[in-house]
Length: 311
Image 1 (cartoon, rainbow, N blue to C red):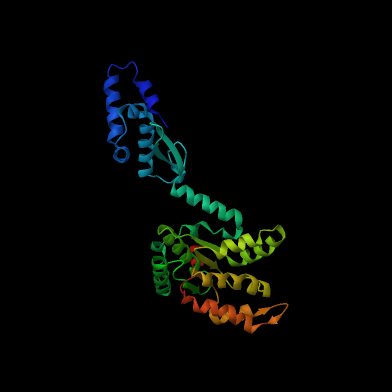
Image 2: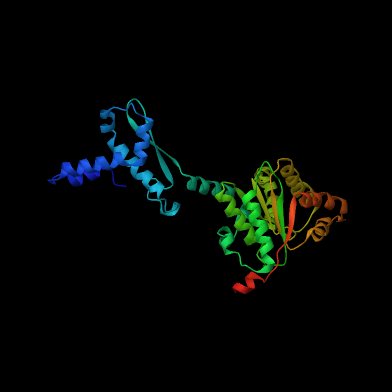
């Protein structure tokens, strides 16, 4: 980033140097960001402002970049992803930098993904928008319900979620991606986990000592999306000590949980009831399903197989 000192060096030797310097100085003080700062600090002396001109120049330039943000990857600021704060210390103007909202979001995502590998979701899903949902009759009701949830969700106040079910490839996960993006625009964080990988990862984490950390992270997500529940290998431990514990905590804290599945409620209950070692455990499966049935709205997603259509 070009500093004001650098700009002044370019002007040196130019006959109109003083005029250009005056114009540059006036431009700095005309900046709405600088004007707002001056309104908040009316007692600053002309000497302090003159001595801090380079800081004012840097501040207004960086803030102008932020006001016309081109995105984190193209951030032109001196420190990519950081925005300046101008303050007064001992009659001197000083600058400090802090992460902007986009940088903070990137750091949160990195932290998530370093903790739970099963958070990795295809790029198409991460970029999903409701405007891109295909307007087939079989998807319109589900799309409406999904958008309704995304616009009205209140984690901590209302724990009701969604249960989207239907055949393979009809766009259930895509709708969840659209929900996640709409929630993000509202400042609500969501966590999408691919269920088969997540349960497998949790089992492996017992050995490396990160099990409780991973479990707590998912339990406390503002909005949790379980993608493809029913596709996992069911065991009593998965059903009772993982899924049941997560759901019970989230119900108590009024945190919405969303699901996608190839199964409807009854079919998922059958899946939860059976495992290779213990056979059928209907009562325990029913206990978990009661938490899902009472705290989600079931919506069938129909339509063509999007993956076959795209290929």
